[in-house]
Image 1: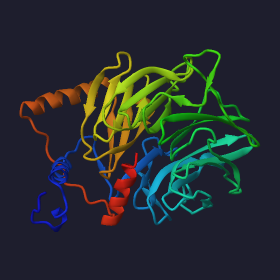
Image 2: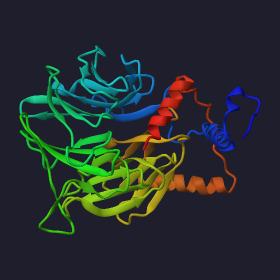
Image 3: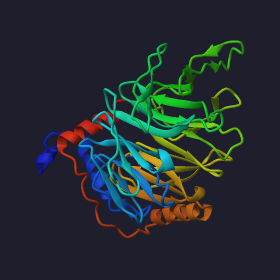
Image 4: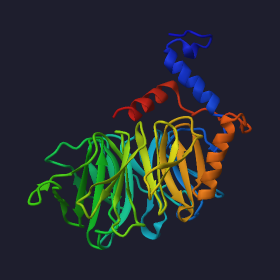
Length: 388
């Protein structure tokens, strides 16, 4: 164990100190035109009022709007883990927090709205949709519960748990755009166990959908089981005719689950390390996670086309912008980076990597500022990110 001259090094292993030094050196790069923020960035969604802007969940307990109309939505005193936009007129921002609540604000005025209290542990994922006549908010927590809320009244319409197979902490929720109807949505849930569950929800009922067994035509399986461990993100490919489901997992892979084949694995992308996020366009598959890189894969061949290096800590989310011409990534390192997805731009990145190998270096950028968290909060967040 190194002691060093800094008091912060007294209890670090050689590997930890080397990792810190590597990240400090890497932090000066300009790749992806980084926007440097003073917090850890845990999730992001597109801003519906500005096509090039994001709404970002921050560890400092706020939601930040990036882009030209920069705004901060404040309220929680604990990290915000997830964000969504919905409600009447699609003008309410919702954010789930470590404080176990879901907070809300008016998208344009930042005026605080209703607070939704009911979870008994961290809220880890939120989405918005409509069921029948009701605008609803759906939240998933570390307490293993999915709660469906009436946005207008704050009432809990449903509290959902898997009573047959033990469901662990929720990680992500998404509504199936193909099988949902105005009166009944199909909700897909991912959690810290490797099971993907589907639920048919109306205003008055909840039904867990049984899945066709790929090996036994006349039997059904309780859930979709195609990964070995935690599933972090779900993404429906709306560019495809079948609207297949893409997943990213702690087992180091992203997978395409074919609807036509009962949501069994059609394609596997071996990113390596924990894959925190996956996004898909008509030409590319994009993955990112713990290894800090954003990887772009050729959808036709399944081969790695380009590695976008810039982040110097775990990437937590990816958002497709510009109709598929751009992908934004957010990270624990406190930066937002935007990467063009045009083939010529990716070819340019590959060429720059070759030049760098031959001694041509890019100009360094100023070193980003710190995360704005205390040592205790840093340790707690690190424990949460590593819990799976």
